[in-house]
View 1 (tube, rainbow, N blue to C red):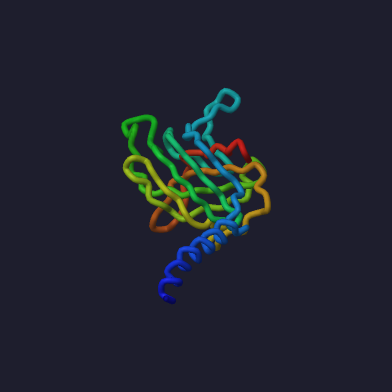
View 2 (cartoon, rainbow, N blue to C red):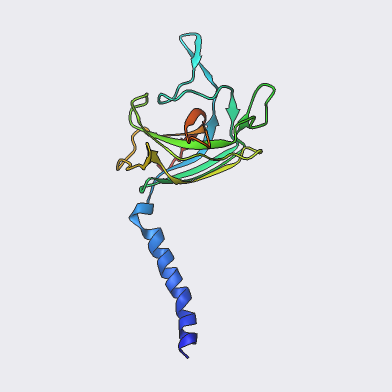
Length: 181
C-alpha cells in the first residue's frame, strides 16, 4: 500500500520542484533578444570606410549573416542562446562557416563605447550549417559574472571563440533587443 502511495506522490514532488525552479528570482529574465544583424566589417565615417568596432570589439574579418537568433539573459548571469545560419555572406567562403568552429556570446552593459562592462561565455560549437546553442554562465574574466540590476544600453554580440584557450575574437552578429524590454 505504501509503494502505491509513493508512486502517486513522486510526480507531485517533481512538479513542485520544477515550479520552484522556474519561480526562482535567480532565473528571472533580465533581457531578451529576438533576431540579429550580421556584421559588415566596414562602416562609413566621414566618407571613409573604417572597421565596424562595437563596444571596443573588432568585427570579424568578412561580412556575415545570421538567419535566426533567440536569447535570454537571466538575473543569475546565465544565458540561453540559440542561433541558426551564422555564415559568411561574401567571398569564396560565402554560405559556409569557413574555418570557424566555435562561438561565444558577449553582453555589454553601459556606455555605447569601449568603456562598457563586458561579460563573455565560454566557447560553444558552431556546426557546418552555422547553427549553435550557448547555455551557461557569463564570465567576468575567469569567474561567473555578477550582473548589474539593470543593463543600460544592452548589446549582445556573437563572436568567434578559440575552443582551446577560450579567448573570444571578432564579432559576427549583434542581437536585436526584444520589443518587450
